[in-house]
Length: 511
Image 1 (cartoon, rainbow, N blue to C red):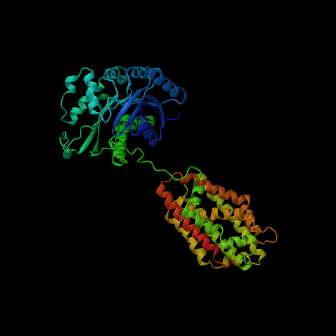
Image 2: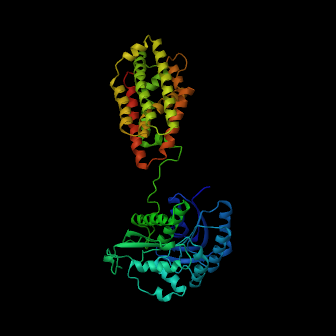
């Protein structure tokens, strides 16, 4: 069964920093599938809430039913619930569908101070939803308000002087029914000695305190950040916890991970808006510049690759092969050097098999070696037509361009990883296929009386195109797993290898 399906029941924030919009960003950043049931539409931005339009509970219920009956739900996370009847309805839905993982963010007042839940609805929240909550995530003002509305006003008015006081508050709220209570400490930073800070200068650490069953208590300490980028922190934290639970992480680990996620989101915030700005919800997400399965297409269209690639594919040596004007002595010299090159190309592919971690990659590397051996035999047959024996080929000294290129490929293979070696091999594997396809269809290519036409046909034949396909599939499979910076490093290897391929064409005169 698919995991990571989270249904968020909350209000919408048109400015994108809080509410459903923030929830969906958080869940996407954690690799979960987000669904939404909208309880209210708000007109708000970083400076405050301008208006609220409450969605009727009956329609919110339709949204919930539509998601659960089709996609299914692993975790429900609630935020701004807006009305008492909505709270009652959600409690019924949770019971009806046997939801066992519920994260409740008791959104009551926005960061800018707007009332988001009527006071009379807080009692409904305590009676109907808190007892079903897996995790309740109040900040300290919300925790005090919950206790006050449940007749614990004396305790609610007690001054908080230590972390122990925060834990005591969490325990009293836990007595209302939640399995776990996370009392968020952003509103009450501590000094380094863990006493409550009185001035901005004294603020040193934020403590989020998690209390759970059987007396369990966990602290998550984060450095205090004097930032105004706190819009939607509560929504985002609760959704991050929900994401962890949806992926099978236990509550303490999910809470710890979520707190670290929020701390980093504040630290790397984009500084948007004139008031309390949003977090950076995607601080740990790296986007590849190509879609899965389209790396090679992206590679060959890049400006830093395109010109180098076209210089190689449309080199005058290549075009002279196509129209049959290449001097025969140049072709003889080239075909011998290419045979010598293929010896080392085989070594490099054998090294790739050795560096592989799975049997499929090993099989493919060995299959490519088989194609190379077949190609070498075609070179031998070619040379026989010119009166050059295989012994003479093997006794020929490598030219500098051949030695430089082959040793570069082998050095990459020795000093770097398997994928780097594949990128060093790629200009040859992909390039000869591209050259042959281009010449095969080029209007100036001669097919009759062109002694080089069989050479072109060799590289459009099924055995070679199959080798290109295998190599391309390997690259596509593994490139999508790399970081953007690693992609850039690998492309540099490809560019250098392509330049060395061009140098191979230039060993002999082409006029």
